Image: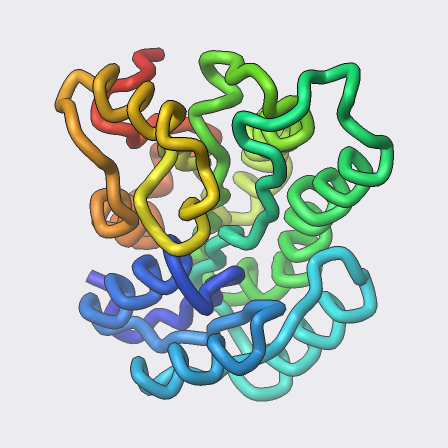
Length: 244
């Protein structure tokens, strides 16, 4: 399904990003994995026969260095998965106790970082002739999760960004979609309060936990040439917790 296609995955060192990379590799993709967690990222890349490059999405210069390296070594990119993000305070402070520093940090990584990565890789995606982008959002922005305002707002922005970029990138032959999963059971969500996990696991149309592997086949398809007709769509891949 992805034979001969070069795919860049951000936030690929662990959890959802690693699972996405593993599924893409199973489908024959050439991989470039990126993360701020360098040691773990290099280990993940080594296990998948992929290249690893460090990146800090809060630093524009780091994103440009990443893109310049990929342009020099890979030349063109067929797929970009904007997975890297930070989630702070799930089940934590209410909106009026949220600090400005936390808000700004979440927005700089999740929103500005996603935009800057997309901007940096757009020329390589256009050059491929069938570029595809998948943005990872969250169904929290579809149902309005409480006590999680910065993260929920940032993921709502990613959904809106996806729709706007679809209009701009479509004439250039690049498709972009947004996948909005629910809370998953993985390393990155070990700190989430048990009651929040229970809310999801009992409220899904298909009850039970969601794991990273449950969303990766959808993402792999969205990276194929045949997925262009889905451009601009936001897909809640969450076992039926949210319907749109």
